[in-house]
Length: 68
Image 1 (cartoon, one colour):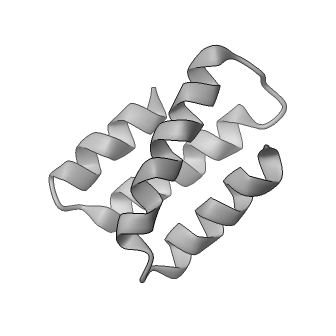
Image 2: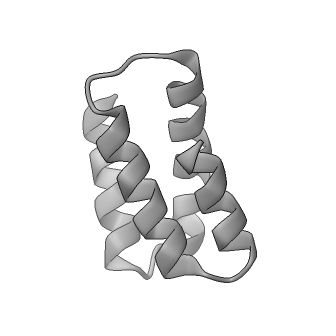
């Protein structure tokens, strides 16, 4: 799942790629409702505050908030 891939990228120190992967995850999840997607969104949301200095992270947080 793209949410998990983004987490791995973040752990490896590639923040920008992780954010891009999570944005792609949100694009793919548009209009889809499932437990896996909800879990992925929860996990991404939990990691975004750690990279709050990033505009891309703020945009992702906003996209996730409007999805809820």
